[in-house]
Image 1 (cartoon, rainbow, N blue to C red):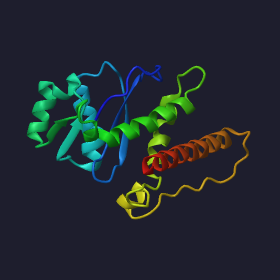
Image 2: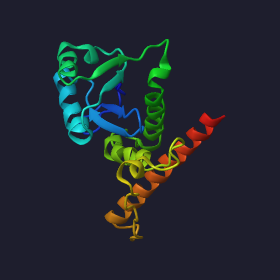
Image 3: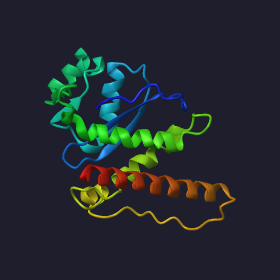
Length: 191
């Protein structure tokens, strides 16, 4: 767990908290603010991780002050979550997070408008595309690994001049671009 911060303000958000599940590598991209408190972090964790995936046995995070606050420390102790800091000397402890952050950075470069304020609008599609792309270790999508089926993703051709048509085209474009970036990353990793 680590924050991507100092992004252009988008609907009151300026940061992303990407969390990558260690075993399957499934990712959750959580919208947040740079000014978040340790209580806010705990609430995001409960809402986005605990409620949907259960309590992890271990977290790896950078040495940011929120991850070592007394509230977060006490919460992890009560929930029996082991906390491991990633370090500059051992970046491999959180290598998957670094790869996901690179994907998010590519997404931001591709989909931040000239005004730089709509990245929040399309972030969920990047998460979906990441989790719905075939991964090198499993040779199938994380979605399939977790749910035993591929998600329904069959967008019907709609008149591109309508709002629904423009939205449909944007969804397909984001999905294809993120999948392509993942494939490029996988091929680079294999070398």
